[in-house]
Amino acid sequence: MNNHFEDAWYYARRTAAHLSRGIREELQPVERRVRAATGREIEDPSRTERLRTKLDATEAKAERRARRAAGRLRERV
Image 1 (cartoon, one colour):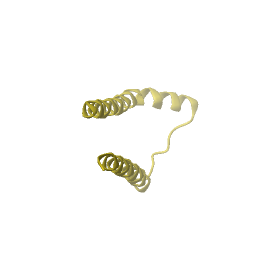
Image 2 (cartoon, one colour):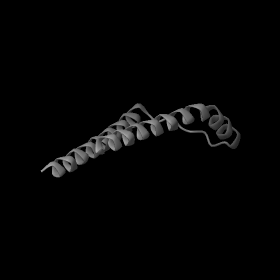
Image 3 (spheres, rainbow, N blue to C red):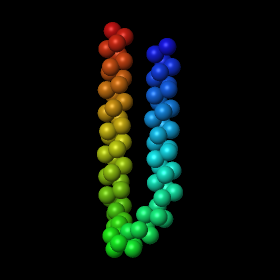
């Protein structure tokens, strides 16, 4: 039964991530127009900054997965 809940949480998180990405993508043109009208345009991050951000996110994800795996291991032992 526990595996069903873990699967449900996985799909719920995945759905939320896709939903937020989709909403951001749909609202980008609106955001650009509002920022242009108010004079607060976004500076595009450099390639290095984008890669560093992705690296930090990947590192955090790996850490969460490792902690989860360690927790499962403790439960089994």
